Length: 191
Length: 191
DNA sequence: TCGCAGGTATACTGATCTGTGAACCTCTTC
DNA sequence: GAAGAGGTTCACAGATCAGTATACCTGCGA
Image (cartoon, rainbow over all chains, first blue to last red; front, side, top):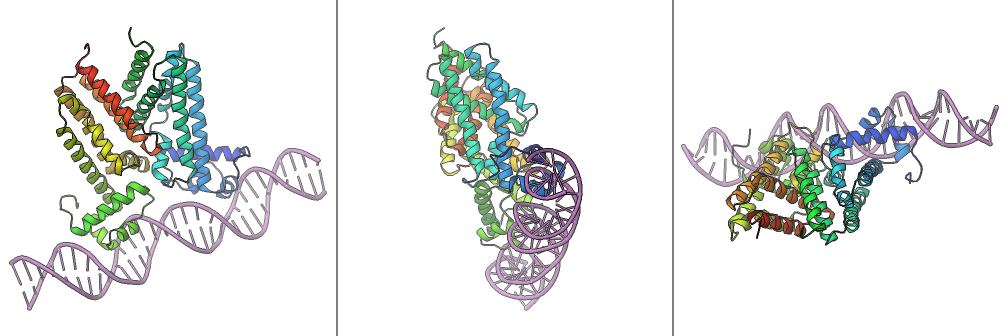
């Protein structure tokens, strides 16, 4: 149970290397030896800090989740109006994908780790639920009609844009544009 | 170069076992020994038929792509009106996900095989491009305005519904409903 | 009857993977 | 100056992986 303890400097370097390697090459394809080498650390230190590869994978996903949520929160707070705040996550996604072009790390992780008891499943499901609830809360604040249905639609548009990203079809602009239209027509159904 | 030669009975059993195992457990996590065992075949036969695991993976994806396209085509042809034909792939998806509940096999494969020269990338990209073009052709036939933009929107909705599927959020109905609304408002902009 | 394609049976190579053991080093803190 | 936390070094266990070697079997068509 290393999760309560804050990470040591070596632990932080390990997570940083794991983040880059797991995301860019896949979890199963990257061995702990490679992560240890890239973080300038001994494999022994890696196991002293994380206990197992599965635990390191969970830490990698949790850290990524934290970074993503911070970016979305900042984007929401920077929005000018409540209506703009509803589609702010699409702005965050545009920034995010500039440096993360291999799709959703959580969806990718679930593809490689089908065991539902793996901690990755809980983290991934929580991340999507968090975004769904955020969409709904923002829709309520903006006075949208049918906020629950709208939130589901926005989540699907968001995930669709992320999922198609590795295919270089450039769907994000169209997806964000449709999201804004949906919010607009939901706040003023009869203009 | 085994692709031109039709598959032998043992070859078909191997592909069937690979389809089930690769999709449900992940490509990297499933070894060729397991596939040989599940198809009641020797590993030697597997290598005589496919030459390498990478080639078997490519065959698995190509066969899955073929099955999926056939289902979509049938759904399109069964549609009553040109407008209903545009959203027919969402009907096909509903049938498809009844027995394929671990998301998109192609997106999942790309997550595990980051090497862009792997044949899986070409097959996955072609599959999404085929669907995008199909949406556009159907939109043109149905007389939709801005068929290219509409096709991109429908693809995003489609991929979003598939991507969120392993999370059990049940987004497909809302996604399909929005798709129908988009097509309707695109065929008759001012009712 | 001959040859051959498709397939079986089994053992094996060499690489790679996660994870451990044991001894040692170095800095900080009490 | 003693103790302990954080880290290193390096060897190693045990499993699993992709892919190969060799010899054999069987049904079928020329």
